Image (cartoon, rainbow, N blue to C red; front, side, top):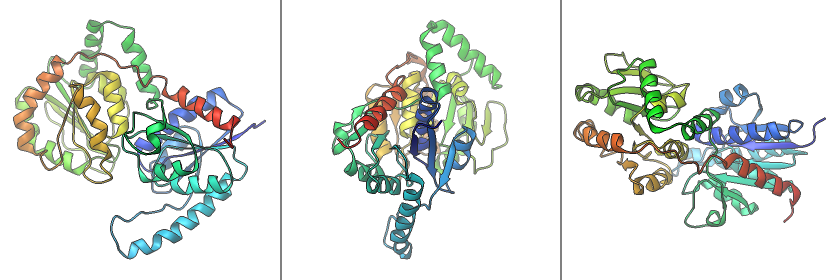
Length: 367
């Protein structure tokens, strides 16, 4: 018998969906009789990730927020009203809504507020996005992955960022073995991926959709990087074609076993999304972060903690050129190899903390 209906909102990119899936999986194990519904849009990664995880996905109209005044801006109010109406229909009878950011969240928050359904929000970024800032107007059940400097999220419960199951399992393994055993495992993973275990490995990821800017730099610099006895594993993104492999370089559209790739890597080049920063910090890795040039600047802020710890280098996209990479890869790789790969346990209990906040909201919905 179904006890409650719990609505999860968070779509578009893996950065919004993966934390939601982690919390949903935790909730499903603790409350197997509850009905979990994910809200999404037809254009987001949730259309593949959510059903694959075994959860019910219901779609609403995507609200496209234009970044400049144009004819498309005139469509936004109509899209918003339609998506709110669709969300209200799905939310009828729901007991709680939890959002993780992204376009799908704004109509979900408004619909929940009009139905007087308690709202819980988790913000992964150090600089909250517009949808979560909007949602914060309707609730005080707020959680943050890392401290937020200003606004309502500056008073949020600091829970950490929910880890994917494979990363959480890897973290548990890491804390139970000594450094030499970890290094032996890293060598084994390099060999399993087809690389020389004695050579440093550079892991390049541009997000689930890839990054044309990062891909282009790697393509033009990879031969000179290989010449410095550095191997490269390159995830080009699901919409891009993988390059022809050669000795010391392999590319794939998507890395399905990301935990194994993290173990093998000595240095990572990536965007500084909140989830990537969390995983780099959790596993004690070293990274070159190239923040996404668009958005509200949250990616640059996300990386600052790791930079201050001496575990990352931050390079803006204009400066991240093939020549910069060739000139600096040796020195940065040396820092990475000298970096002690210690595990950080701060995010290990994030899912349970967020679930506990949801329980509070369910018990006191009108507070």
